[in-house]
Structure formats: C-alpha cells, structure tokens
Image 1 (cartoon, helix red, strand yellow):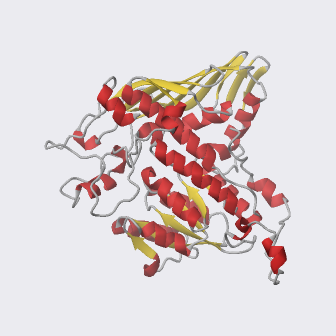
Image 2 (tube, helix red, strand yellow):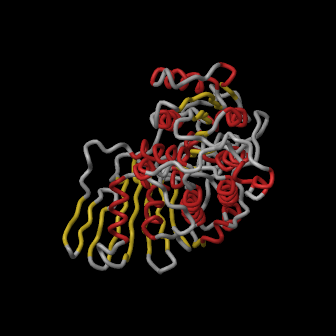
Image 3 (cartoon, rainbow, N blue to C red):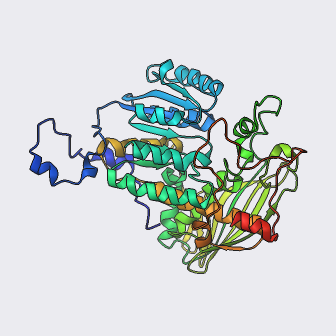
Length: 449
C-alpha cells in the first residue's frame, strides 16, 4: 500500500542512536524562522521521559490497549480517562489500578464523563488511546491532532465515507506536525504474518490469482441493556452499540476489517469494486438492532484479481477466521503462516518468547515516539476501513458498488456531534423494530450509497 508509511519495528529502533534531542539553549530568532512551524507543534519526548497517556472509551478493548501501552516501559503513566458512562469508567479504572498500581494515577478530577469528555482527557496527555465505538473515531482523532497529541486508535476508524475522508485529511495534519499514529490492525506487527506476507510478495507461489477471507463465527455479546434499564433511546443504543450502524458499521466493518486488511496488505492496494449479498437469517429479534447476521462479498482489485469474502454471526455453523491466497504455483493459508509452493512447503515457527501482536503494536508506536521516527498507520487504517464499508454497501444494496462511490459517498451515518439531548440517527417504530436494509430496493440504495 504505497500511501501508507512503513511501520518501524521496535527492535530496529532500539538499535538506533537517538538523534535530535531538544535543546535547552535559546536559539536565535532567525534560525527559528527558517524551520517549518510543524517542528514545534508538540513537545519532544526523549527516550527517558515519562509519557502521559489518556484513555477515551472504557470498554474491554480500551482496557486491553491501556494495559499494553503501560507495558511498553515504566516511564509510561495513565493520567486521565473518559467514557460516556460513569459505571464503566469506574469499573475499568479499578481494574487497571489493580493491574498496574504504580503506573495508574487518575485522580477524580481527571475522570471525565459524558459525550464531550474526550476533549478534557486529550488536554491532559501526550498520547491518547481512542477506543470508543468506531463511529466517534474520526472526530476524536481530529481533536487529538488539533491538540497536538500522539494517538493510538482502534479499528475501524470510521463507519461511513465522510468519516473515512475526515481521517485521511487529519492524517496529513498529523504528518505535518510530526505526530505518531497507531491503528489497532495488529496483524501488521505479528512476526508470523510479516514473514508470510513477505514470502508471498517475493514470489513463493508465483503470481497471485485469487484470495479468500473469512470472519465466520457465532457473534459477539448479546445486547447488554434493556429498554427498562436505559433512560433514553440514545443510552439504549450507546450501551448496545454493536447493533447500530452509526456506532459500529456492522460486523463486516467492526470485525472482518482485520481479514480484509491482510489481503490489502498482500496486494499493496485496495479493491476497485465490490458485489455482495447478505441479510438477517437467524438474528432477527429486534434486540439485534439493524445489522445483518451474514455478508458475502466479491472484491475486485485493479489487476483483475478477486477476493472472495465471508463474515457471519450465526451459532452452530462452520467457523473460520482466516485469510488464504491461490497463486500460479501454489497456495497459502496466511493466518496459519503456511505456504504450499512449487519449491516446497514452509511454515512459520513461532519463538516461544514471542510477544502478542497486541503488545508489539504498542511497543512499536512508543518506540517511534521516543526516537522521533516517522509513524502513521492512519492511511492504511482508513482505506481498509473503507474496504469494509464498500462491502457493506454492496450487501445492503445487492448491487455493484465502486471504490470511488464508497469514498465519495455523502451518506453520513454518524452525526458530527452528540449530546445527551440528541436523538439517535436511527430509531425504532411503535413495535420496537428498526428499519433493515432491503437489497434491490431503490429507495434503500439512496440511503446507503
């Protein structure tokens, strides 16, 4: 993917001498004026400095990401947290404090609650971890870069075309300011994936003919809050965010992005069009909101090759979370790190001391910050997000949708701002049922593309 910057590995960074320590001596005004203003957009962080981090979004993934960030070294401290719900914030603060007592220092005045709480966290920190439902991601990312802060944000980074465009625009600002951005597509940091992709790109199975990608499983958690427990429709949807497209983007975007991203990485590019089908076959109860329970998409790349993609949330079926490629002289199971080629078979041998890729992605990001190395994963994060959105558009419409249509779509699922007085963009009818996309319906197509 030519647009994205290469991800520096922490091992190589640790071997390099740190260059460019911040001077404490006054510098002549003429010399300062000769340098671009972006050089002074944020305070430099030297290898031994304590990095203050903040967490926005106190769910399970947020807790995991914060724990992994704290595990990059003792000179990292969690100093601020935010969530729309106080009960979630308190629960996760207690858990993190128990795990890393010396590194968690979040006094009451630095625990912020509500839709605008993220801004207050960003003010307090050097790096912010963004792990709210993904619909909020473009706006939180924009605020972090506006405030000149480094970012780790979970995937996906948007739920619609306007959101993706915003992330791509903000990513350029991050580069200008020298800010580092990590995105939670951890397979890019997993040694087995890295080596397998490298061998395939080097021709281990010849020209790549076709690809397959799956995230077929039983689904995630059932809705957590009932209507009786939630005070408003907005609270109900926020607590059950996975089942609403303005918050989640459907499971093709929230989960299957990982597998689609691997194929984009392998191809060094992104699809030009998609065709698909999907629907709600089993998870039809109104408590499952508005998302589909299965998607099947064919993606075509610029060179004419095809990716055949499936993702499913139905229990009791054949399951697989994997990526595969067929080449002119062999094939590979990418996720299993196995290649079956004309020159012989190969399988990656994992070192018993090998770290989790979830940890490595944070090690790499924090090393880049401390050594002031170029680091911005927002570009491929945004475009792999768009790949999943493109697939959702294809399954919801039942038609063919192009990359340009998805990227330039004016259909905005996520409002630019939310307050406790806001009405959700989608709502139930008198029976509590949500509107479900109908493939082939012209009216629905206008709502989707």
